[in-house]
Image 1: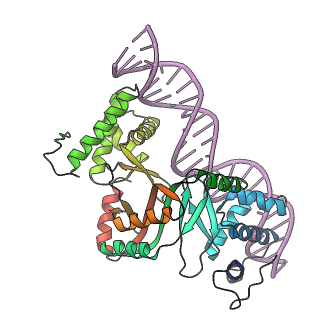
Image 2: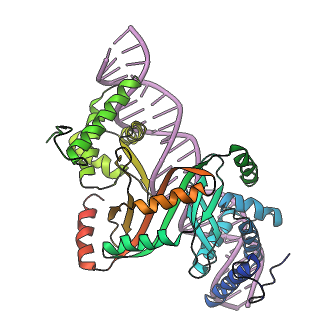
Image 3: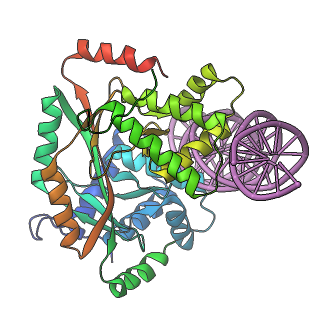
Length: 176
Length: 176
DNA sequence: TTAGGTGCAAATTGTTTGCAGAGAT
DNA sequence: ATCTCTGCAAACAATTTGCACCTAA
């Protein structure tokens, strides 16, 4: 099902409107920088946004193989360069957890921000927000006479209910 | 000056007692695992703990060249493997900031923990602690039925007083 | 004496780039 | 027609490992 963004008719944060916003950012970036619309970029964007709905934090390898299912012959370098483009366009965020792979997720809109809790047993990546933690980070920087440019907060934790974790493991391994 | 750790006679957190604790951890690890005391490991430990006093967060390359000043001919692989050994022994913490280099700092003792604020202008690395942030992280994990194994919080910020930052830059570049 | 350590060089891993042909506008 | 993009392969950068020789215990 294509994105039929209808801003105002759907609650904020809904995947459909959010993906629509990201598509608009992409289109604007392409237009404003004299770049070209290509079939590869369309497929990569579609594939990337689809994985995003399940909050998958795909690696380049994972994304590449998903892209190749839709369009054979696409090269690693194209996906690599396109994801950089998406980052520049404000469509994607780049994440580096501890598995040595660069991963991507759909960008947060506006002032939204979230951090990650990674299960050390199965690798599943949860997301969470805490405004008070953000405030305290600002305060810590300010006390040093600095202003925050960006931050990263990653929590590595193990699941207290393994049977639930097993389920996550299966889900996650699908894309590995 | 060698470390003359005198636990109980100096305040907790003092560099001298702390380094003494770390040396003891190293010695215990070597003993308990049937490993051997070598001149290289001694020199690397001395050099590493010395950089730690200034909270330098050395990279392998930086550490290697400092080690070679004290003992010519030491190879990269030896420093590499020795730092892994120190991590296993609880002597060092491994850190990966965004400059693509693995850095090391003396391990925190017991329950101590600190996070980092990295200046995006000069690369200088500050440290800070915030117990409330830690509590909230625990709470976030608990709400998902998880228990924290470790975490990383890095704040990238720019300095509001550049002239101060210049000073830091000089200090930091010394080891680059 | 012997198991473990060292130093070199080569292998790995993940990322980045140069370039000739293909494609979008 | 022109300028960008793609796919391949090669270059890079940082880390990791195999191996023959060395050394602590």
